[in-house]
Image (cartoon, rainbow, N blue to C red; front, side, top):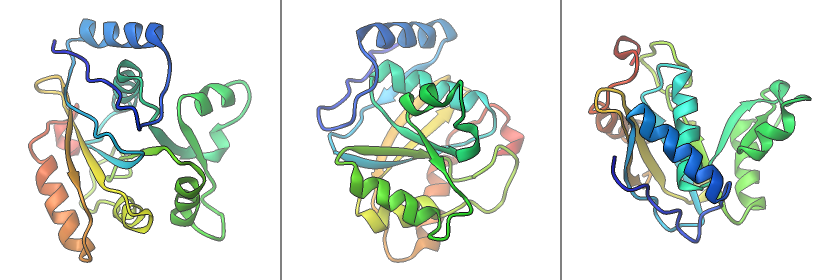
Length: 195
């Protein structure tokens, strides 16, 4: 396994030397490696694909803890209850109220406005099931808060988590989605028939 990337100074931090050691040890034991680097930016939107299994979340958490970067992730606000609420929040969980009148995009944009250093990881498929249409909310969010999208791929075939290129959304969301889907075709999910 290669060297674990460093967490750049500008990004929000999570954990300490002990959590980085333990998480990177678990990655090594499972045969996974991380390729690429995180950009030294205060704010990012991360699009992670393919998303075909609950194991994707566990893997992403190990990667996050190995690097020591705090990347937030979205979950229904109803799961943020005692006794797990504090743990979920500490690990970057963002409770989302889907029935809020202002909508999810506004909620997330407000998070970026309120946090000088903010990284949110989103799975464009929006589900672990097979879907032909990916959700473009991550692109609209990146455009609204004026930050790039880091493309992060999970490749179960080579057991590699790839911190890929930065993508800057344009004015044509449909074309952006085509380009991003094309980029992620190189990766094999845990259950390829669902990708």
